Amino acid sequence: MPRKIVLVRHGDDPPDDRVVTFAVENGFEPVFSRPFKGDMLGPPGPDVAGSVVYGGPFNVFEEDKHSFLNDEAAWIRACMAQGIPLLGICQGAQQIARVLGAEVGPYDDPVHEFGYYPISPTPEGVEFLPRTLYMTQAHFHTFAIPEGAVRLASSPLYPNQAFRYGDRTFGVQFHPECTIEGFRRWQSNSWAPYGQPGAQDKAEQDALMAAHDAAQADWFYGFLRKLFGTAP
Image (tube, rainbow, N blue to C red; front, top):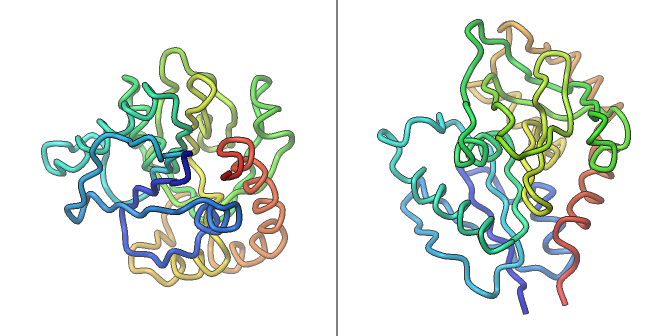
């Protein structure tokens, strides 16, 4: 029976995010793959119950510069072809959108979402996201909604925050997997875009984190249960 959730990662953060917690607590085996470090994904085996493609610092349209993106694109196509539940987060959502033929990249005048921002459901997205919630963000690129996909959520700065393709493939621009501890690491990282248009300052982030992180976590764990179920 399928038991593995393959986690395609683009950095070396500790494995303490909410996807890993969900997998362990629900009987799945989280399998970490870092193609940017040379790991090869290959085709999904019969033991794969799902996959998550994480965020990261790579421009998804630079396959010539980052050849591992081609391997990840093949993995995404294979998961979709086999009906394997698939979630793309931030860069991962952009990769799924690109595989499906949509445009990906920054606005002409880039604006950053870095902090906690309100995400609202579209009329088609109320089953996915029943109400407006503040979600963790760290990006300045976006994706167009692929042909055949359904736009599920938006924010005031970025109208395309989530989409569904078929019944088992989802992409989200925001970071519901990120815990308070994880965001603290981002706040102290050299790439943190403080002072850039759209980015919140640390005091605002801290206040919004305290007010909204628990609701974000509750929603995300519920979403993962719907997407992946529980392991036999």
